[in-house]
Image 1 (cartoon, rainbow, N blue to C red):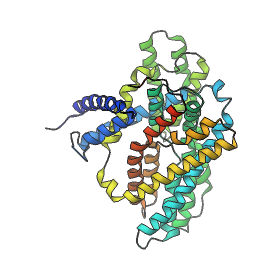
Image 2: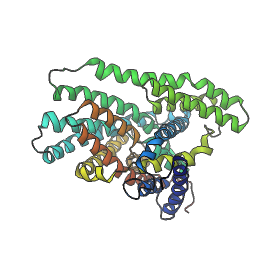
Image 3: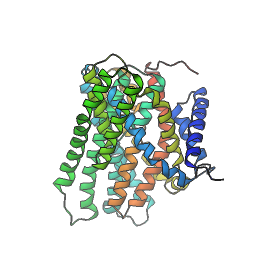
Image 4: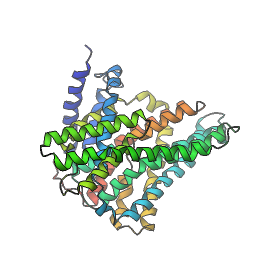
Length: 404
């Protein structure tokens, strides 16, 4: 018997919530439970939900990421950010560069040793350099889910959300720079294009910011003047979907556009209440998003690129942790940020995979290996990173939930 799309949705939500409750009993975050349920239900293990059914849910990923981005933007109030602006800039810069450099150096050597006959400067280093650039991104969905679950508030949480909000922009710029340089190494006759390295990412980021800002008046009106909660919810959700759909149509970042939308709204309304009326939808969206992430788990990919994936995971984590510590020290950040922020910046997912798909198409000589390695590292990372983020928030004393 084939599980149809509607039945699959019911199974995903019910099993996902039950799995998250079980794992919370042993001190693990709900995100890990959702992902593990997806892995168990997916094509690689039980095949309860087949691959062709999983493909029908791609739109859910875009919707969930859009709502998460809006919530992150809505958590960044200017009056709170003014005191940590220098910290956010230095930490964002150094944790991104730390991951990029360490992944590039170590992974290039691993590729060179693993792939027989690979030319270091035309194969191993270009591939590792692009993987390193992609590794600078941090997954907003996992981070926000854990912040909401723990009801975290405090300097670590505020800094974490601000850095995550900037990370996507940094990753886009880093990826564009890496592609421009690696095109010269892989195909020496091409030369470095100013448009490809500088103008394209500048347009991508600037236009995404402009789109989010342009759609903010509708959401501001809904939040400020509409009294009925259900009408507010419909209008805000509609604005988020409009923003996401237009971003996809214009080939812009739906994450960045919706972050800007949420940021403008919360600072224009200046309400002491929750900056979003989307809270009623969060549990369902997070459940579907992370169960779906688990459904994409592919044992074959993990087997074929296991060593390379492990190298990417370890070097990215080390680079982010050390880079965060350096940035926090330079900016004279509080001790709690120096000690724990690096552990909270380890999740990665959507943006990383999206950029890997673009790179695989651009560099056919190593595209398949790059994509498999990034996918495998993302699978491992999605299981290991969320508990570390929760651990960091708990150790910082910013969790406000009772243990269940």
